[in-house]
Image 1 (spheres, rainbow, N blue to C red):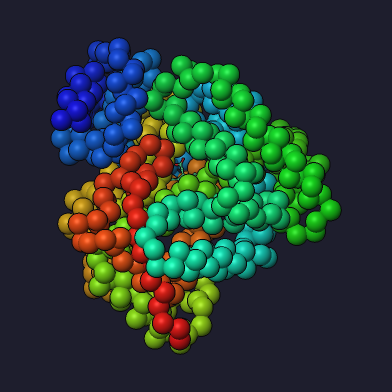
Image 2 (cartoon, protein in one colour; image 1 turned 180 degrees about the vertical axis):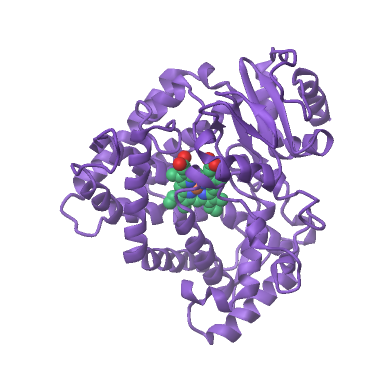
Length: 473
Ligand code: HEM
């Protein structure tokens, strides 16, 4: 098949140095066929890198163009680099195009580690935390109810729900950021999503080292479009009291930042933080919801167990996030989907900002580090039967612990939206499974594919599903 030919090609171009990361080794070969690599990146790179780990060990290095990359494939080595030695590996690879996308490097997700970046991230973190405490729960509940209505309007017809999930996820961020939500059919939303998709496709690209071949003009256009859309929104919303994130972000400006170098943050930082949240918070959550429904179609009895639990614990009412401790089956499903399909499977590439080491191997400054979260979540040394969907592994006596999961990365670059995402995943899933039974579109033969398509975000292939309303309480 083209896949196996592709894999062999990839093999012959990469040079591996299993358990031998000493710089005294001969330099790796360069990679002449960039085009092929890009196609391969679309195939299922996380799974490919994982299979290489089974042969070469949990840490190995690849050379791609002029860039040396070290791939980390187990929870232990990923935690050592990202958490324990966070200050050595908190950088991002430099790339000219990345700078264009991110407004001169002033992006949280792509920006390299610096005092300015730290102040910027802290500003966004505080703003997000403040609005999480104030309004997040209500905002998610409203979108969950809206999604419920959208599914009811399908009237039992089979439909591909992926776009509805994307709209729900992006409406949460736009409500928080601009006090505005969009209808699926609105031209404004289509334009915004078009832009976001293009930027997302670049988000994790530095590790392909192909970024510099990307047509710069196009990237510039995308950035300008986002910039204008957001500026319009902000202007239109200036007198609204409840634009939580934006006002909390703006509140943080003009005040001395708590740094040694007297960093001054500007409204460009506010702007870029908003773009970061939109990019980070839309496709990830939406993809996770599609995966959840896909897995539940394969195991209808699990769906029934969650429904049963929701009925008996909630007694007919809608759930609150605080109910999660009393809903272990639902939480186990959420964890298992995060394990099998960490939607940012290779996180975002890191860069060593000084000479350091991982697992005893010397890692020179500027090495690009790829945390293979997908690989860590399929490590047979940690997970029994790692490729099977078994939420029961997280239930009492099931032997697995959520502490071994790393879907949000860790350390200085931990997903900024982790708390938001967790509340979204919980409330959306609880609302959907309380009100609907998901059944395959036609026959059992139409069960969705579970491999998916991996680029920056690991997405399920398009599939249709019927959402049958449950009888009312
Ligand atoms: C970064 C996962 C949802 C905002 C990341 C990273 C991962 C991740 C693995 C990269 C960490 C690293 O570089 O080591 C996820 C998953 C999500 C999710 C699995 C949902 C299921 C969200 C949401 C938001 C968000 C809802 C916004 C509200 C961000 C931002 C970054 C990031 C801004 C960049 C952080 C930085 O570079 O310092 N996410 N994410 N994410 N995420 Fe998320």
